Image (cartoon, rainbow, N blue to C red):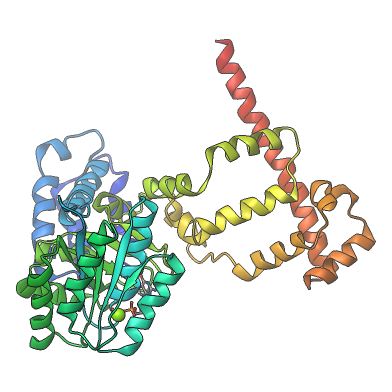
Length: 439
Ligand code: GDP
Ligand code: MG
């Protein structure tokens, strides 16, 4: 992938104590190839490479103490700038509701993303109304209604008897009456851009005067995604892009070209089919991720969202006193799950890209389920005092969880080892604190 190739190229220059103009040229030739191969628009690549070259062969870089690092810093900064520099926030209307139109081709992920955005807004204590304005596919209305039900968010629908324009207008009236501060309009898509589609979208736009027109594009379609974005922008004046399916096997080029080609920022990225798999797009973090510098901020944000600070303190206390039980263990398991796939989290750690095998590491959801089943088959007492789990209890637990006695043995052993390790770590941390205190 793009990240691997760029990291490989940059590794060669990173540690160099002396960097010549020829080194920079050589490196940029490889960067250029890597970007083109990742489906980044060729004009974008050309401009990007020129900008980096110009800055990187400048005196302050080549004469600096760490020229290799400096060159990478330049690449990082230019990648960030290419994607828009800063996170582009959702616009807010002065007079609620804030109306957001979701547009895009069929299958890009409009309906799913409408649901994700509703969830995102809900988390910020907003009160969105979803609008089913894709009346051409009967399943589309149903799909949105199901999402609304799951999220406990109202869905405005008039079936397929009224025109999308009427539906949108009436939805906004209802939103005003019922004090919904956001209105998310899910519109129809076609397989290709055509006049009918654009005509209808323009009519809705005129009727409801949306604060945002968000184009949903599928990252997997590479260059096509960028072309689609350009056409929609030409005909509709979009205000931002949501790039979906970035979790898939994409070459990532679209993320790098969209802003440069359309002038419109990526506001969110879709990272999976689940409703929580929507992330605000941060150009600097994306650049760091591509360059293998890790995306620590996103990681920390995720962790902070999910891990209750009070609980973390309580956990630390328990570990110190060796009171960590299987109940705590289950809770931990749940938190890890909520944070998302472990391999994705690990990938965000700085340097993780360099650790062999880590990339291919997939945390086995089946194994997690098995572990969970074993723990859930324990009695309350057993969870609190695993020492009492003797042979007959092990047999019963194995039967109850549909596993084997070996599986149960393995987990008990792992649990004991983990407890010991945690205790050691907690003690080390404690000693450090004390030593500091004496100074
Ligand atoms: P629409 O026709 O534009 O409304 O597209 P849908 O919302 O119906 O989505 C089409 C398919 O793409 C569905 O199977 C979604 O689950 C899937 N999808 C949407 N967003 C993502 C994403 O970020 N990642 C992945 N892997 N799949 C997605
Ligand atoms: Mg749809």
